[in-house]
Length: 381
Image 1 (cartoon, rainbow, N blue to C red):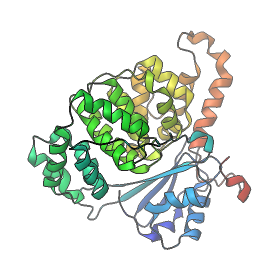
Image 2 (image 1 turned 45 degrees about the horizontal axis):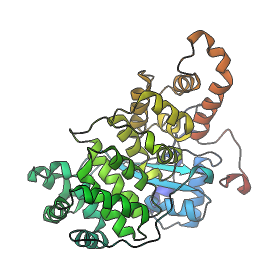
Image 3 (image 1 turned 180 degrees about the vertical axis):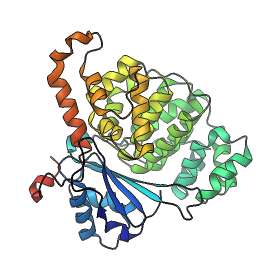
């Protein structure tokens, strides 16, 4: 993630009134800033509130302020640059805000301690000392037999490829059925975050098991963000692997709905890519999206191409249609029952209108047409 200087908090509004369906984009000295998913806040109000609370803090750290001091149920910040070496590049920051606490549902952590064999103990020590290396090893596992590729991908992030080799040596010894079952037990019952992160790394060996995919999705809503980050990295590696395959997702419905609703928004794009890459069954995919459409449609309406493309790709996979970034078309598709003939769509006008309103509320523009909001209006409800 790009680190943006505090000066970026002082921004120039691109437009006083954004058209319906437009993203909430502000311009700053180092690039654009886009807000996704806001309901009661306007982008300009939120950025001003962040600036007033932490005038010297870089913008990439504002998710903690949004959650801790501004009443957001969850938040995430992603930074992008348009050149690999970052020199002379434009930066683009996407800030995702989830205001409604009912949409954020992290799972409960275990309350026990499970005895770990070697090399589990050794890998747990790696997690406690260098979690970033553990996650990078999971994400790049598919390249482990291509040392030059590993070097090219790891070194720009400050990783010594030999540290990844050590992680792979340990996980290679955790590929038996007893290891898979132990990983599931730890993720469900162990109170230690580092033990759960170790279990995530062990599951990288088992992408031929649907249950392992389900467990990693569930780990993305672990109450400890470090476990969620490890699962995110592992799933990114699987989704981009040439060995990815179709997965039946029915058993992971509750975790998937929680993620699509906005639990752990840092993982949101990964979830969308994973579901598309594993050829989610269309009827089930449609059920998931209809259960939690808000943030997905907000991403479809984002101006930042990388932010919206994973949302559009999932909708294309599930629907067999390609409406691009047309929110009205996607809202209409979601509002119509699969077996409903086109001629009867007038009877679903209310549902279609609701979904359209959801989309527009989630990506509302800069707010110039709304007037000032009272502080009581801006709290998550």
